[in-house]
Amino acid sequence: MDFTPPPIEDGYAAEKLFNSGFSYTYDDVIFLPHYIDFAADDVNLSSRLSRNISLSTPFVASPMDTVSESAMASAMAALGGIAIVHPNNTSSRQASIVRAAKSRRVPILSEPVFVSPSDVIEFEDDFADSPFILVTESGTSTGKFIGFVSKNNWSNRNDKSVRVSDYMESPPSAVPWSSDLAKIEEELVKEKGNVVALLKGEEVVDLVTKEEVERVRGYPKLVTGGSVGADGEWLVGAAIGTREQDKERLEHLVKAGVNAVVLDSSQGNSIYQLEMIKYVKKVYPELDVIGGNVVTMYQADNLIQAGVDGLRVGMGSGSICTTQEVCAVGRGQGTAVYKVSSIAYKSGVPVIADGGISNSGHIVKALSLGASTVMMGSFLAGSLEAPGAYVYQDGQRVKKYRGMGSLEAMTQGSDQRYLGDTAKLKIAQGVVGAVKDKGSVLKFIPYTLQAVRQGFQDIGANSLQSAHDLLRSRVLRLEVRTGAAQVEGGIHGLVSYEKKYF
Image (cartoon, rainbow, N blue to C red; front, side):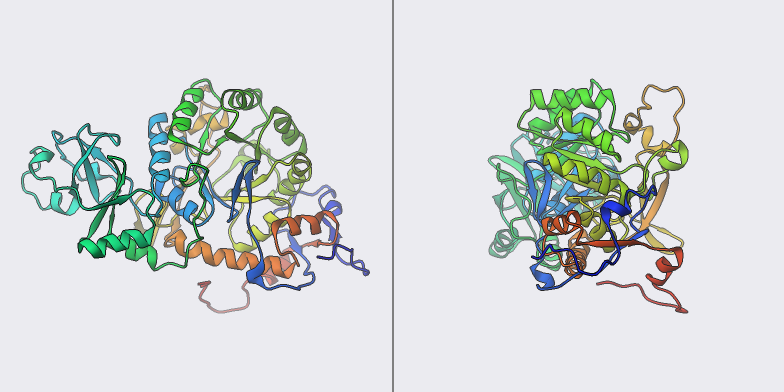
């Protein structure tokens, strides 16, 4: 790879562009093409989430309650990325989501519900989003597995007031929790059944149906092995706040096997976060802690000095975030990522570009400007793996997507993220909306990755490290786009068109 600056001066080095006094978003800037001497398929997008956690895919699911729970965490890990489970729930509930995601090696759409044989299932809502309710002796995930109730069989019962033991089905054939898709399919064929149990010792992890196996097998080939930790389980992160009660939440998460913890704050440069960073590193020195959110070099340096293993960058750039409008504070995401990355890399601290991602081009820009990974909310919301049910709105199939700064989310605990949990009046810094059905992340993320590889090929970078080296050596050049240039660079001049990328 040749890092010699081009003999002809063309475009601007990032250092000059981002020190001009303007706050640039991703759409404001464009990279100039460089030299290609490799195929797009040869681009290596592996990266680091934090000092000690490596990912083969630089994608992170945001800790939002309409984005990241167990189904998303399983899918992102299977794709080589990671999800950060949201904290807008009880500490025990968050820990159970982490456990559920880590205790399987196939990205199935199920979050198990447990009851005891003496319980009564009265309402369909008792099944949550699962097609089954699992029956154990204790009614908990750690009890001995003795049977299950399918939603279909329960719905067909006239008398729903009887105990589960009176009509539950016997346990199906089982395979170890760590079995891959091929092993599960083999067991289904062997037993000529429609469902197989995943067991960890005598504990049942979940049930997998033949239909789910066929669904997952129909998607593009997953990353071999996915994101797996030293414990042999999938990598899963979780977010916590910076209050005293979050220390108890952290304890629950560590016991559940969480691999990294994100300190969730809209403005991370606070005494509360600095003290929490020091607490986490003292009590759990082996646990990677990611600080933020930050947008300036000064903020970043404070957190680096406190001991963070990663930095989350972004303030007011998300599609449902109104912090910049309400509080008049923040920064254009392009500038923020470049500025923070330019100081973080000197300490070996990876940067997560959080927010402002609407397409693959934004991902190319974020990663090339110095980020190690991109964190996405709206890009993943509306997918099959995102929490919530689909509804129809104006003829379109959609799912709810809300900002953690919306009043609706704040009433469930996210106000702490905006340091508003002790305030008498709640001021919204986000909105509630809806996003169109995107299908499964197992389908559209592989296509997104290929588009990112092609972007890297055009700028002459065959890896993230290569892109960063080209940027810092001033070989990679940029320009600012006028409003007309942005229009010209998008779809224009057509009476109608079909926007379809895969």
